[in-house]
Image 1 (cartoon, one colour):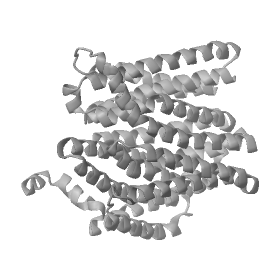
Image 2 (image 1 turned 90 degrees about the horizontal axis):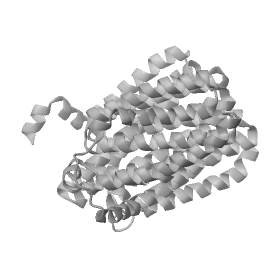
Image 3 (image 1 turned 180 degrees about the vertical axis):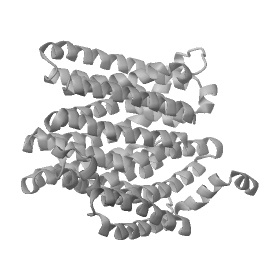
Image 4 (image 1 turned 30 degrees about the vertical axis):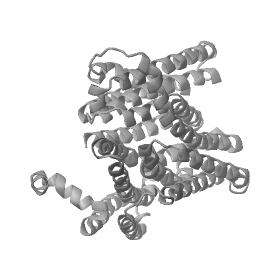
Length: 480
């Protein structure tokens, strides 16, 4: 549970830091920063994500002791790719910063450094999670957040150009790993070079299809932000970027936190009881993910007017709520794909269908960009994105639920959660437009109490049983 708590704290602090950077840079520069940040995420995904995903799938406490070549292969692959990226960033920096930090080459340098820092941090965080070392993960996240707040806020204040803030973001994540390098190490063992190539091939077969899919989804965000910038200017791109970032965090934060634990439980089930047990665990996980993510989406919609009035910088108000509402359906579908549907193919080590769904979403988004912006303006881009992501989610869901290897999801839990969310939304809707502080004071506890009561009464997704087991561990052990 320390892993989930650490991730939620990290996401909350990142949300606050994002608002601070948006305020210090202003809409136009924040639009450039957001576009570059998306580029850094794409670059990190293309170069490093196949290795991070391989770490979560193939590394564990048992592997740490019995199969040290897995960690050797991961470390050496990261080192080689990282050195290439660092050299490219240094080359851009040599040309970019000589002419000032606001040029394209300087921003490319900052983007490369940010991608390198993200990649190194995410990899070591994945190793800590795979070992179920919540204390180490919590420490890594805490150190990174302290450094990020100090370095990024200082850069935005003293050197208010996107390139410097991007470089500070990468440096903060890299330094967190350096400071905790000793507990992150594995026991020293002899390096078996003949195993290296075979290990990398296993990583590539498993991870590259997932990378291609994630890159396609990130390309949707990158292309859409670029389309708005070209259609209505960088200020409008800044409005879209802030809404997209905040809404995606609202949708993704809990999903990612759950996945940190739930997918490792599926891997553990496969190691201990076989593939059938792992797939059963994945199906159970999907019901739990929906039961916890759906009320978050409804709750975010309910508090959106108050959130805009209280915490969103003045320059972004108005467009922020409009873009957030348009983006929410697609981002919810994307979250369900990442944390409920993709794990089915990950546990089977057959990840090609994930690419197909991403390409379908990218194609539908592209068609929407040809039609909707001319008719609806910037909101048309958001609608195109939501339509593309929803289509991708429906296609991938069809692949999971049909065929001889179809997964049997806990439909009773999913249906009960959907009804409970509908009841919560109807109950909260009349209070959305109260004065902002009053609305938050009413909506947040009311939503939690109402949905929590329904979960407890009907034991939706088995959450009451699991919570009861946590509260009464002695009785749970006796029952077993």
